Length: 350
Image (cartoon, rainbow, N blue to C red; front, side):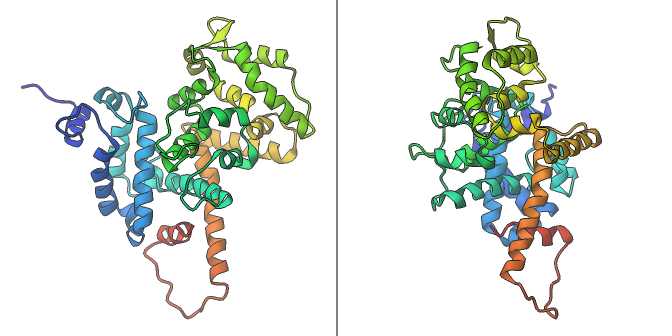
């Protein structure tokens, strides 16, 4: 009797009988079951809106990392290649979703949603859609206009938003995962497509110069000295060490441990400055990051990002809660299910 491996079993259970792939809709029953039964998510039962946000965000994250063709479908091969099955098994065993660092962490979801909400509030779009100007404002105007133009030209991934020139929540989730976890395979592919202007599957010195030119002007505009282009091009070639000196391929970027640095040099001013700056505050941030890397050698850039941003989110939520109730009644009943539930009550009040 032939046995079927675990991934194939799950794939057959989830997919529609007529399909040879998994769609986002196929994961909705899974998320409903998780939300209904997982002890670490019971506090979301008080907020149907947050339940929906959690389910959507988790599904978008799953597809960002596992939809290898970018067509909204996860094949059996994709499922076997990825780590989703392992994450689902870990979720069954772990009561605290924050300890399940892949896909299902409530901390990840809240950080993602809060970052989207910040841009929505600043942009003032009641339909929760973002435009280019909103994305330009991300992380204190970190991104160059040229790279944002490429994103909104839908070069790295086609938007699911049906309003032309606008980005919806799923599109933003894909962007944020690419931006804050640049070393992930899906992220390297995302940014490579942005840099490959003529879509010939190679990035040349001319294309590097196209993006670095704007970075040079941005660096000059804030009073810093920029590295001349030819010198920077030599640095980038040395960092990536491509198989051919004339151009850099996607495979070259994936093999290099310095691809993230190169991406930041070319289109993220804040991260490029943070890596190069001698400012004491920036040096302290780098020191804390190195300490965290030593304590958690298995963490990805995304893990570091979430664990830096979540305390800020929690602090802001507690501040807003205090602002809404500046003089609470000391005799009022303040019982809560648990400490984590109490924290989450403040966080979800966007």
